[in-house]
Image (cartoon, rainbow, N blue to C red):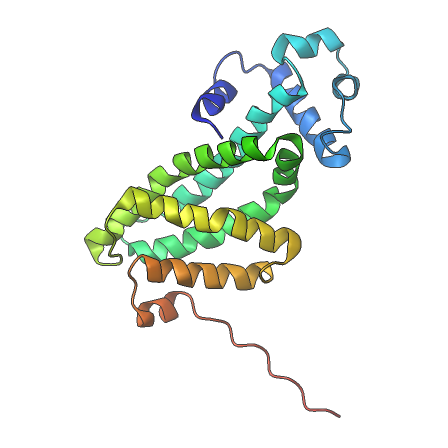
Length: 222
């Protein structure tokens, strides 16, 4: 999401009433869909006058930056908590972060679908680009740590972070929603292995950190 949008979502008079309206709108967006949710429905559900809504928001679209900030906050928290132990090798921390973020993304898929419904394709691309810019900063720091400890070999930490996030953004979402190009767990494994190769990890280290699961043996026919 745009940085200015995130800033607006987290500053100003963040009153209990605003939080209540955001929570109510979120619940209705998830239950009914964005297009089917009116401002009238939001205020009716929240038990406030319609004029109260417009004290805080210009339209129902104005609620979305708060929800995008919430999702981005979940991703950042997952990444930072998973990579906090500086005594662990950077590649190990990266794998842990991807697993954690993947789990968070699965939880957030319904809300992400609301965002896609509520915005044009051009707006979605801009939001995702700005979101990647925010996430790329801690990602680049981790890659830099990996260059220092020998985990990674890259030319540019920031560029490597952007390339990694561009790979993961749509790929993981599409695997969760449409099972393409493969189910989520399988897609995560292959994406992680591909990313580690791109960051310079050797084959033995990749196998140690992210082995391909052995498919279950087929039972012989009775």
